[in-house]
Length: 304
Ligand code: ACK
Image (tube, rainbow, N blue to C red; front, side, top):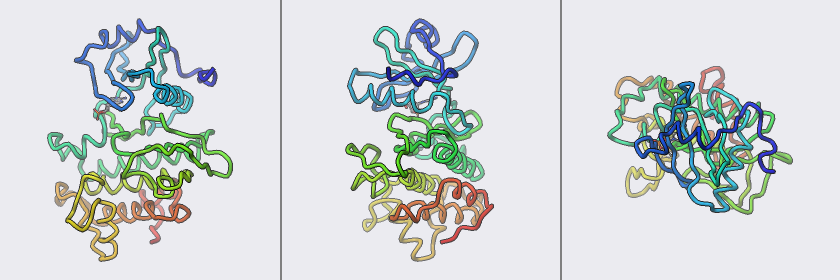
């Protein structure tokens, strides 16, 4: 019944097809693990490379998020959303089949030291940031469904072969209903990225995604993980540090030193200022995602 809304553009795969594509879930093809289970790389008979998400346990929670994910993104197509090709619900299997993203997650590219830091030069980081903003603007404003993602963070942003960014993991996504407001009884998301009004009171609007985006944008500029970065003993995270630097008028201190002279100071300051607007404690004062896109592209000025 939950699959009733499945869009025709999203197909069903047989378990046999998936087994053949992943070489029977060969550990060599394992791309990684999430809270839900494992992700495998596979190749379909027509040569399409896919990523298969396999739900590990039969937990009710996992099931609900799995079905939710299908319902949310089946049929949704945008260059900055990871495309869902289909699913497999055969022989007690719950599998989601996505387009394969060659360059893994943004978190890995930004924070894992073994990954070449210069893979993400300044123009690439800008493009990644604008891509995430465009994907979110589409979810919030253009998609017929008006979706709040609820779990925007660097591990949920994947990078394709050309390092374009796409949003993934719609397990927690919600439809934005009734005056854009929703009081959640179960607050789900990730510490460090959750908007304060949502984390504290379960007050959910699309502005919660805008806040999370702001944290991600700061992480992109700084090349540092918000909650794992302690600039000194007085500050517990990147966000706090950014707010202090804003007061001192020293925003450039935030810029990732690995970027060297590659970075345009004007563009870096602009990205940081946009991020700071997004993490405003008052949801009403945060910009919409289409306004964010426009500011990042330099089409409109950033009003502080
Ligand atoms: O940073 P990663 O290697 O990129 O670690 C995670 C892991 O699986 C668990 O989510 C990777 N992953 C998820 N979806 C895809 C995909 N569509 N293409 C490639 N890798 C993926 C992700």
